[in-house]
Length: 310
Length: 317
Image (tube, rainbow over all chains, first blue to last red; front, side, top):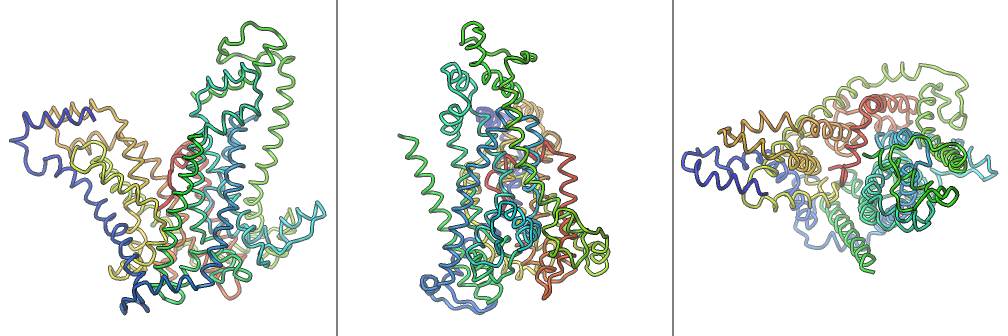
């Protein structure tokens, strides 16, 4: 900040009259920004606007379009498949929130606590699934979750009955939550580790002096002081959850799984756009999805804000 | 620094016991750092606890490794046993037939090369675009600088799927459908990349820039002669993020690429699953091929991966 004003003065006093057009700061800035802003303008800003415009149209294929006002949105309200997809997506998001916040948080805290030998090695192990593409994750879990697969053999060890994870309607969401747990725990551990290392050590020291044990320090220091990072991960998880697509695609194709129990909002969007080619209606689904994510994120922010003031 | 903190934590954890049992002076004496082993006796309970906790974490860690093992083992099972033996820990018989079939029956080598081209292209392209823009936003004073930056970041709150249809139509109109450019170009302006690079540049010492400007160097010379060499570490981190993202992406290439010889690996695998009778033997082996390069890269550059992805704010797109 300070230095840039300095260079501005400098420009004014000395170099301004001599400075050729291509070397004036706003021109230089424009040239450096140009590639990014052009690409961003076309493929982000314009595309968002166009998506909204499309959502008010009836488009069959590419080219033919009719302006239909809110028809697509009205149709959405009576689209039972959309509500089924929304329910599935919401359940999946809720499930991932319930697992992917506490489990990685505890693991991150434990791995930092010196109660574990070789924490770096463990962190790497938990991190490996993060690098695996969702396609491969889907492939692996098609194997593990099959009726004679590993998970059922494991349940058998405890005398539990075999489950048709990929064939039963109400197990479609739990199956995908199991996959999500494997895939995302590692990255959340990294986020939480970063958050925990920002907590000043003196707090832990004085807590020890006051006679607090490890559990108390975890509950009364680590958890409340990690609120910002927990908030961040919560919003990321919601964001990711609502964009569920590749997992059901690999497990069940575009069919949406047993009894459409694995149908997600994005899968519904994809099918509407690229199977039935109703591009306008699919855009309306996209707009509603975006609004839901934004509103939900704002609600979460608000909730956390309230807790902070107490 | 991190290690220092950790060892401090360990000392504090055992401090209360120590002060209680051994009465080692006032409790508010700060724990000493880098203290050598404090002797067996006192830490016996601590050591037991450490063994138990490590064992528990190990069990979870093994559970996290098993899926990889399963993928690998399945790729070597005979084709008709892939699902039949999916619950068996050890393969009854090991065969390389699946790899042989994969190379003979599919264009897996082409798919692999497409993945490499897409990853390299989008990484280099994004790096150029992002580094240039970040320099303007971090080091040049001009009107609406912060507005532009905040606007770009805010766009991250929109899901990519909202853009799917406009981008699809745009790609058709630009004649980029079924081309590598069609996959790469729409994703080049990477908001997180810009954010990361700008933060990094803000941390560069300003004196260098001032000195260069006083010496009469143009902004262009400063950029190529000073900035680019200085931001190489940030570029390395972003290169990992960009290439990983592109390597693992499915949805956008699935929409853009039409002909089989243009598929990247992820799309190729998906089409093998989508067949009338899915070829799981081929799927497993192709999945192994998709994972191997990333794993090798990870073990070579573990630190950059964990730091880079740890900072990777709002994720992809």
